[in-house]
Amino acid sequence: MSIQTPKLNHYETIIFDLGGVIINLNYKKTEEEFKRLFGSDFSELYSKKSQTEIFNKLETGDISEKQFVEAMQKSSSKNVSHQEIIRAWNAMLLDIPKERIEFLEKIGKEKRIFLLSNTNEIHKKAFDKIVLDSHKMEGLEPLFEKAYFSHLVGMRKPNREIFDFVIQENNLNPQKTLFIDDSPQHIEGALKTGLNSYHLEVSTHSVLDLV
Image 1 (tube, one colour):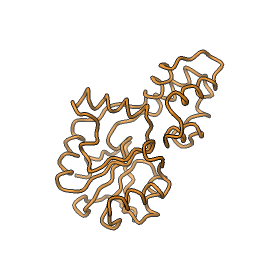
Image 2 (cartoon, rainbow, N blue to C red):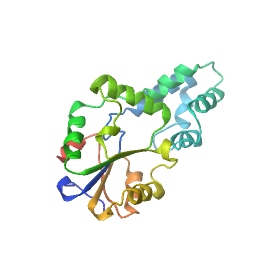
Image 3 (cartoon, rainbow, N blue to C red):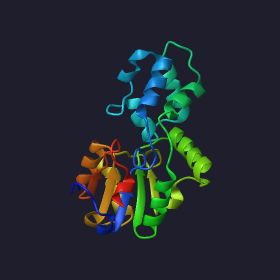
Image 4 (cartoon, helix red, strand yellow):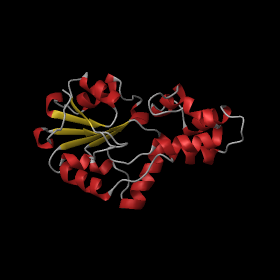
């Protein structure tokens, strides 16, 4: 069931998305950096709503960082370095406010909490560094009972299989579980499994509003 404004105390388990929900993102920064590197038509190759196959493969771990960079380099007539592409790809990653870390620490003592993120090895290295530099933590994994990253499990949202995988592996009751994500298409995928789901409008709200 899609929830308008959930009350977290109604659920035994919470599954959190990462990008937008926990870490602040600005997709425009990556688009702008890639346009600078590759030309003004880059928005046709990459956008939040429609990713080309190369981005999908990166998120399911089907290609490595090296293969991703080489494919991007081949798509340009310019001489673009490996590091320039990595910096542009990571430009969307901003900060993780301390209050969100504290929120997860608190709710993790009261509920079973999980992380379910569409990400890739490049971004994971980058946000792990953000977490270490800002919060002196070795990644976000210690905050959760278990963290699921698409490139490590070989599945991605909104496909039903990844939701079923998390539910079955942890013996979750979908009716007593809440999934929180900032992407409507991911909410639709979760609903197919019977999960209670909440679309967090991150332009106007924060996960802290659910306290």
